Amino acid sequence: MNVSYLAIGPEIILTLGAVVVLMVDVFRKPPPRVHAWIAAVTLALAGVAVGFQWASASDAASMSFSGMLITDTFGAFASFLLVGVAALGLAAGWGMVKELGRRGAEGIVLVFMATTGFMLMATATNLVLIFVGLEVASMSLYVLAGITRKTLQADEAALKYFLLGSFASAVFIYGAALVFAGTGSLSVIGIGQFFSAYVVLRPGVVQVGMALLIVGVAFKVSAAPFHVWAPDAYQGSPAGIVGFMVAAAKVGAFAALARILIFAFPKFIDEWSSGLALL
Image 1 (cartoon, one colour):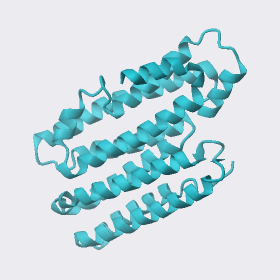
Image 2: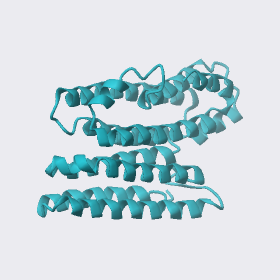
Image 3: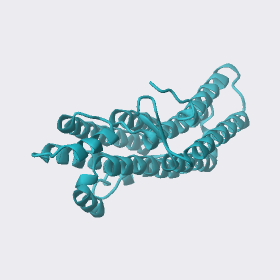
């Protein structure tokens, strides 16, 4: 297995930053400005790490961790956007962080972990790893939606987000299972190579799996007609952090979906392009 710390550098930095925020909050109980400095330094270092990824991938893309992660300019660009969205989200929601007091540190940690999950989605080339990134990000957003715990709207937002998000995750992983049953691979590159090397006599199972993958992602990004949950969930969420929840989910999910469809299903471009047009 070829291990590349460059490929997961931003994710490592964000995870360590989350640990530092929690440890400092537990042992020192600092004022909010200390958390602000830690968050700023963490995001700056993550941005630098993404810059190194971009420089490394400008010549040629590289695979690591047994082909489960790819370092390319597309993934680096998505990661740049995610770091920027996280910074803007924390800046816009800083009033909420200060108002929450001790739980403000938890809000920062949740933003970091959601960003980490979406970065994994943007750079993963394996359906299982994409699902892991999706769940890391989703769990963080579920808690963020109800972190204020002051109104029934916040509780309703978190509950609706959790229930429908769990349904979307189940749809996605079922689609991945059907694709694996039809091709014998969970790698998006391996799936594409399967279609290049073999004639699929009964592609129905794979096509249904592909459709379920698209539906699962469409639920996560609240694309029509899978957006009915979004108004209540976002209305009850903290005002300052809603922008992060919306933008980060769309960047990470659409980056993963683009990689899945282009790498794994170029053979079915007519089918999935029509489906995306409807969304």
